[in-house]
Length: 237
Image (cartoon, rainbow, N blue to C red; front, side):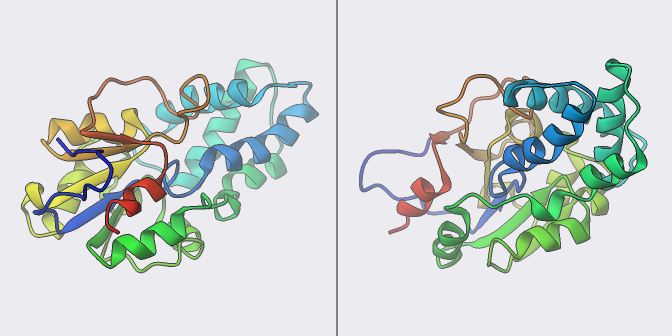
């Protein structure tokens, strides 16, 4: 168990930190809501943020099931499914606007600064449910060079499938005990990581909000809960 006591540091033994990106480093909920809301309003669906995120979560997990398709196609399918549930057929322009929106999703304000601090102490890895090129564009907002990058495109599957985690473990040297996984989503990250015996840090970005946001429900017990990435970086200083 990682101590959260004031002045404590991350224990010795971890050489790599692996990160989920969307929800942990990139504020995908803001990106999703800002892009979907004007599209949905065109069709009379005047929803709250939580309604939009709940609809997204329910349909993204379906769209990410096998066979694999790119994340752009996943997002287009999410919008098509939401539309079908409400007797709406989104236009080609609507589908393109949402499926191409990922590079515009903002980074959390503490992401770049915290990653720069953590990079001084650890090698950094990414395990992301995205395409190679989409992550590359998002990474420009993060300002750090990751030592290992595993995308859904490379794995041919999306988390919570275990394959992206196995690939990451292999690429960091094959020893899961040297890897500390840092993520927001219980469903996509903590539950599968715990199946593999990984130590995990829950960056609970929604600690002050109701509901589950853009992720389906899941059960896992992280080793540490923090409200933001800055709190993790502070453990290194």
